[in-house]
Length: 81
Image (cartoon, rainbow, N blue to C red):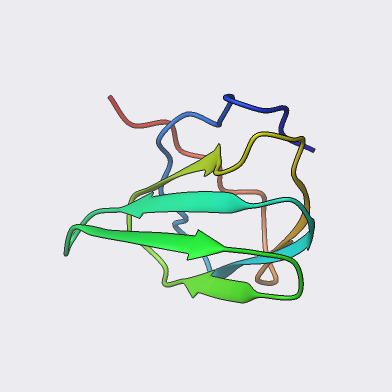
């Protein structure tokens, strides 16, 4: 869950794809390489390819509840600056 007006740090999946599925609320994904912004609502999904830097934030005025599905392998959270 991401509260209204909050988000995660910029990260990059190394080992596998990372998919976001929204259950409630709205998400905004900011991606690099190439630069892109994705907005998701309930029932929508988006997959980030391995190695693509991204930032996930709440895109609405209420809390967002979502699932993050990662590929098989070790947890690969890599914070970027």
